[in-house]
Image (cartoon, rainbow over all chains, first blue to last red; front, side, top):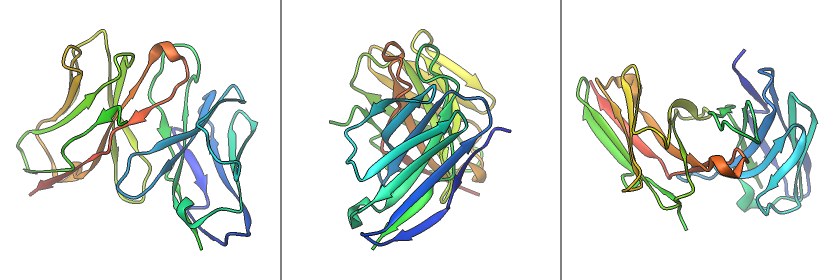
Length: 116
Length: 114
């Protein structure tokens, strides 16, 4: 199993809603990532979890709250988002998030989020 | 400040010919480089990587070349096939940072014409 599975694939939410994005991998990877990608832009890193601990927060607003319940699961809790937060949210995993080697990350299909 | 740049937003080549996608970087701490391919409505898929201790890595039809002095890398696809049509992202990371963080370029849309 070399897949990273993200649910839902599409999400439309209002600015007062609370929703969660989910990501799952069963490759035994110990690093998991959230990236945000706007149209015609490259993916931008939001968070890195290494061995289930948050190791990087790229100054992401607190309306985005990550959670790593176990080594296979990664959630992104959303609350009071703005229309400009509409984007493709990509989850990724890699064998190791700290220490060498920095091998390739496997990406999920993404969740297309629209905030109305 | 864009640390990884792909200056060609798009590239069109004929089936069977060579596709050359270019990528430049500014951060001399980067020491590991990756190419990803992305189809619409899918996540990026890893293609090929290269460490800074090498100047070339080959995998089937895909070859990546690294010129450290010029801070430049390129992806060669030979022969190009219509199924290669996608957006190609160059990404870089710093081994010494031990964070797993990838910095992506803006992407180049490749169209391979039959």
